[in-house]
Length: 423
Image (cartoon, rainbow, N blue to C red; front, side, top):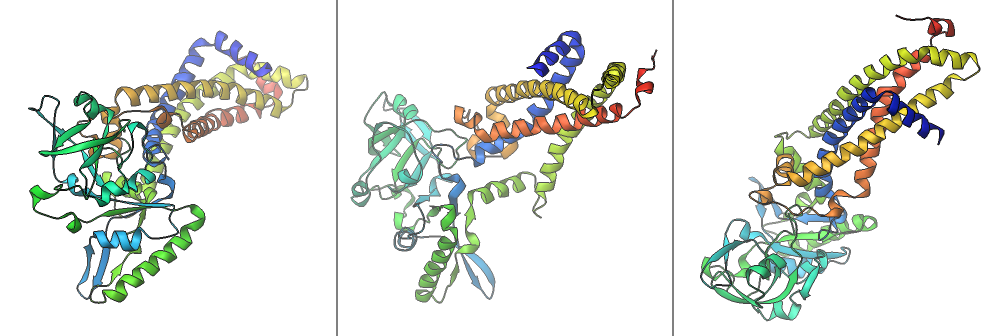
């Protein structure tokens, strides 16, 4: 409480100093938090992608031969008979990324105009792996999947475009709507879709003259931390069973397996065109630069202020005040100003993220799902505990860099020298 009163007195007496200190801290924190928020949104367990921290992706298999290596897609029977039956993963799902290269269209409520939509082609386990919030109805079932029914799950935004209809025309084929979900954000790129359909839906690939059995599947596993070793061991067993039957084209499963974190990190390397694994040093250098330059300026301000306060400190030392007591007071005063500036910087970062979210996230991540889209920004994306921990850490580092060293050197001066009157 005593320190709080001292800080209020400091702000009232030295308004310009306090304002500049808070503003300098706020800008430093805002820049760092912009970067932290972008990548927090990409790696945190945010609905519907609630398993990010335990997710592994297997988009392909690697075939090694005398000529080198090549990629082999995962077909339907491999997904069903090998990966889907694994015991160690908490859940398994597969997605056909065919529509990432093809555009799909839906008839609007007037039955005349078309609307481009993003379609996810998957299987019933998808809704156990990803936790969408259903506003109406239910996901398509295993019976729908096995019976090749043309059913789909749509977002509430699509439902509005259909004027509440329970059916739609997708690529000139009728589909029944079995469920309506809350519109996902483009920031959760793996679950961002307008319509979700089973890959067995009758006639889904007819216009491309292919069967669904021919389409490669991207497999995703959710594996608890304490089962990761067992998961890798089971994958090796699956690999061995496959290679025993297909000895002419043996595959390597583990080489193409990537965690969610590794996938995000690879995207960061590609964004900055750094392929030797040194991107960490670039990120660390950028963050240190964003902290060190403001801290240097703030340190100069603290040093100048300490020069003016030396007679005060000398008197207090003469009356028995210990150096560590005076140092603690100065650090606490500056920490209070730093925390105020940090809070202001956090608010600036949130405002910038919300106001310019259509390009801020794309600029820092190069995510193709954000092209031409204004992503939904939900509260859990901004108010995660990790975000506050990062903000607090940044504030403390700034305070240590800016306040502690100037105060320490100033308080080491003798009392007589500090009592000298300066013009």
